[in-house]
Length: 201
Image: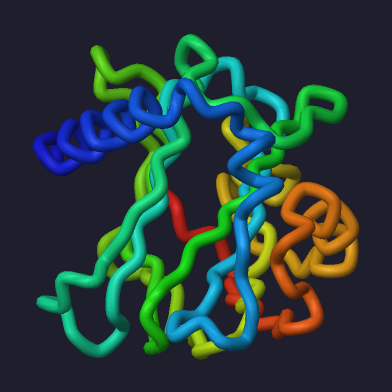
């Protein structure tokens, strides 16, 4: 597990370094997607509630729902330490990131997610191995909205670290401005349902 985390962090740092000379706003403004694409477009929001100043890295990993050995898995690392990755919005201490990625059409699941508070002390809040979210579909030629993935570093009023909400209408208003070259008429709500907290401390 530690090797997996380190490998993902190194990969993320390399990507950030290569793109550092291109303003993030320029990348977003020029990002394109329409119905002729052979892949589906995954769209999700990641919201970190108050307490984000204590987080160094947030990790989300996805894989094929039916085939554990399929190499088309992918992961997102949000490196907050030293402000490596800047949020798209900050409101009253809440940090919001918009995730867009073109992926092969198939059924996926979230199989790992972690809130890493201190890499040196291994202070990690992580997914329970027997509790995975899915399946969810990524369809060809479709903008697949998966939901708002909300993380609570200090737990919410129900004692949860994590939940998924449907904020499509709210998110669309901002996404249309940030990514004007995406055909948002293709959006389909593929909301991932989670009825309980799936992260353990």
